[in-house]
Image 1 (spheres, rainbow, N blue to C red):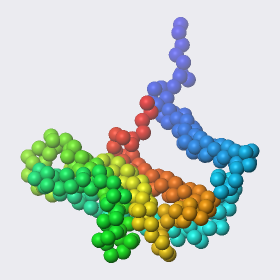
Image 2: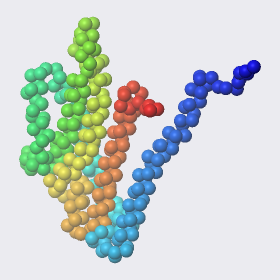
Image 3: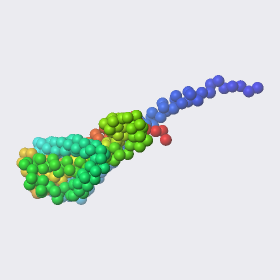
Length: 287
């Protein structure tokens, strides 16, 4: 006579326990994402320090990490205002690029004639090197800061425009037909269907434009070569190079790199918060 094992678990009970067992693996994966890059960075810094000490490299050729850290602390009163100037140009240009890029993308999809008339000129502005346009902008703008802002805006503007326009045009035509069938106005189709569908594309443009705004601000400062109290980090780089103050040059470079990484993480976080509950690209799956 066979007996039934009453202690065996039902499928529903097994399914309820599955998320609990998956939590440690997710936590371990998140920790690895932090620990591995930090360990890699620490290893590179140690290798750098060993190389400078072992081969007795002069500090005006390659300063040690300790000397760069010392320059970062001692020259902070010089570097901090320059960083603020670069950040001001970067974020102002990015904000204007967001407004202009989205507005022009919405305008472009309203009519094929408008797209044919305007889009080629946006492409021309994008493909022309900013260092070639910068001298003209410097001539026709009243202040150097305005010229730097225009240069940074020109570079950050196109990725946002291009991605948003692509998203607005990639809406399911069956849904568009459904909206037309129910008598939806052009404005209702835009904010109820096209804009939500274009959000992932817009956020991709935001991530690209955020990094490009910082790069363009630095390139514009190099092209302008401005001096004085309102100069950004690019001018401090040039100044450090001319004075052979290599530790300060490295410190300014590190500040720029950290700023770029923080902008990337901030834009990625915004994208994750807006998409992780519904969009296919951000929803986490078990397989």
